Image (tube, rainbow, N blue to C red; front, side, top):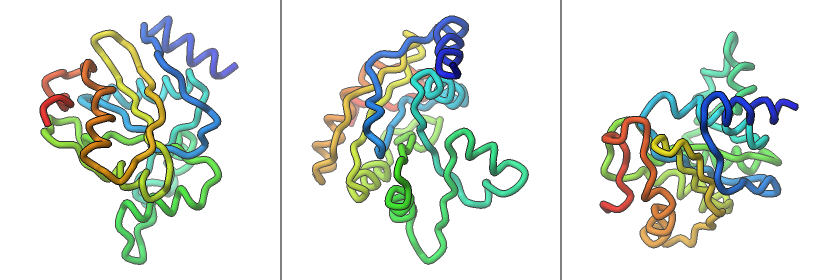
Length: 186
């Protein structure tokens, strides 16, 4: 019932569509979402997540998950990131993958809503080390389409793999297009 409500809101009230599909049998993955140019991206993604009925997680420093907001953040897919013990972010997130039966990490490779000329590669190394697929998802504000790509397993050839992944985002326009990463430029 909840999925139908989210879907109705997403399609009828907001006017968005979903293309492609998310294979629910994939219990662990890194879901890269681009372009990320506006705070609007967050609620579009949350409502889309409800419309497809698949839990997609995000991470934040463990301090965010204390009272009074901890349960609220967890309800919306948040997972506290514990970086004690000298672990870097990639290793800390890989530990989350190892500890959970189902964990789908949603992340923006741009790392910011501002214009960037280069993607951050942490998402790639997380997927590589956790041995999980990368699922590309584009948010196209021009067409109001969220497009789910096919799962891609990293090969350890970063440059080649990024070229394959970037193709999924070539025609996507963010809410603020001038802030969007251009996947054909590098």
